[in-house]
Length: 210
Image 1 (cartoon, one colour):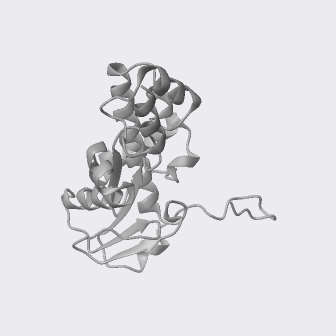
Image 2 (cartoon, rainbow, N blue to C red):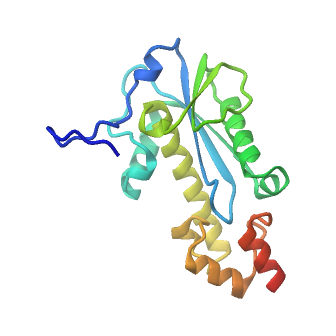
Image 3 (cartoon, one colour):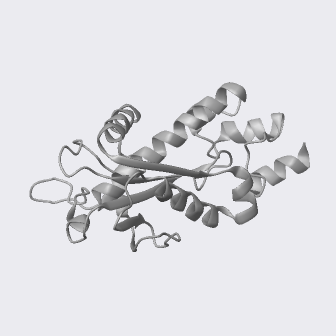
């Protein structure tokens, strides 16, 4: 993380610099859930409004849960948003990278407005119907990508909290399907659920031992 020594302020706050040199509308794209052992991978595509962009948009990983939830609602109310996902079955068949690209493509396809350009977090691009640019650490550089990171993260977390009510014991309501000790112990004692990624090594190991 980069800081200004003189002013003691962050210099890596996302803004609209990347968007400003492109013809609108520009969509920012990000995903959530590549690493978890359970649940879908979710992507969001966000076209921010010309005016009235919510204050405080940042990389979702930097935001407290309560603030992220507030911004999610504000972004959904003011921006054009598309959400796509790839299921655990698709993750297991395609692999997580290809499934992520599929979720991103689906997010763009459901946008009500077709973007003229897309800014995608990371170093790889999905197959889109518009020009696109991969931006490494884009969620800390582009306001549109940061907004997409919030929508993707909050959408996926809410999905995992709903699934936790049907499949208690794995801690999905707070670990979102990631490989915590609680999740690992539950896999050993309860075994995998239909929402576990069977191609992931810890889940394969639990299947063999159950």
